[in-house]
Length: 323
Image 1 (cartoon, rainbow, N blue to C red):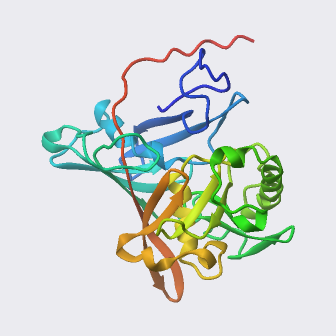
Image 2: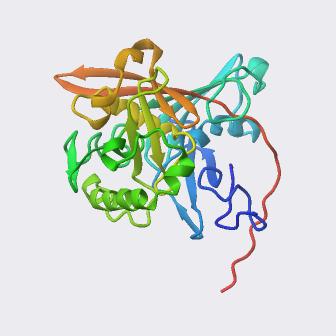
């Protein structure tokens, strides 16, 4: 569990930081699925509304699922590493998660650095399997790699996270602004919401007024030698970095001709080194394994490295609801 709480920034009556990034819950149990060992249900606390959303999954929290399962006795560790396939209940996708467990003991210490996360830890390999259309039903749920909304070109994509990708300059910004500056741009946020509400039904998501998806990803040319520069709204607040599966969907759009992202991407950083998705806190590298069978392009694996550490153990007491 990363955090629970729905509005009070002091978090007197809850856990977490009263932001969507730190108000997340993972419910983990043994899986009954033949291809998985663990089930993972992700709950997103909708800040300020006292609501829980199950319409998406979360790759950052997923990285902690296997360590938690070992710590809580759900599965046993093996030497020198432990790999467990996790069933992501929210989307129905699978992810092979590998962590370091020398002599059957979880190793949290290491030198792997994730931009936007303090310190370093041992690497956690997350190998997402067959995430195309996990929520929307297809990689390009509108049937197009490029759509137009109110005169603005957009790409709607779902390779694990439903996203609407828009060229930053089409919204009269550079794409290099800080999250604080973008969050203060009320005209921009209003325009993004207009686009989101219009495209939600076309992405097979129905009315998205009260949903946390699709995310809105503003893209521009890379600044620091990466593949693409991004600013992501999740969906109404600009992310200090970028979500795991949001990065996967964005990286996927980079390699497909005709998308908004592909037209701006610097593909020199692709290949075995992966695609470097720049964000306000640094960069996020995604490796994609693709194949073409009978002329049809598909993403077979989406590989990322994350980190996790043990913060605390204890009990959270939930008050009874009266009335």
